[in-house]
Length: 55
Image (cartoon, rainbow, N blue to C red; front, top):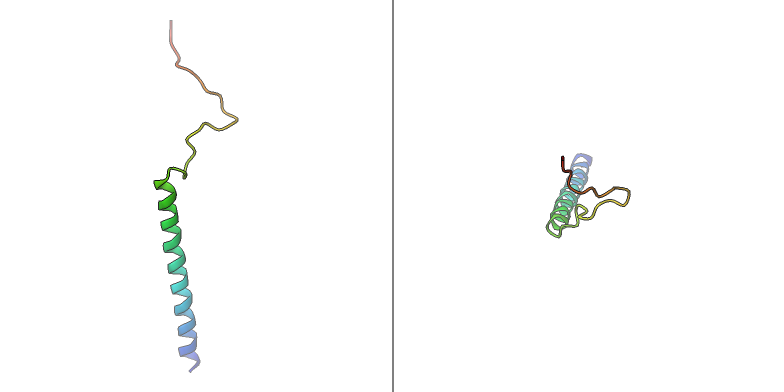
C-alpha cells in the first residue's frame, strides 16, 4: 500500500516538472519571437565607434 502511494507521489512530481519545463520552453520561444530575448540597443557603458579608415 505504501509503495503505491509513493509511486503516485513521484508520478505527480514528475508530471509537474514536465509541465514546468514545457512552459519554460514555450516562454523562451515567445521571448525569442518577440525579439525581447536580447537587447537591440547598445549597453549604456559602451562607446559607439565609427568606421576605421587607414590613410
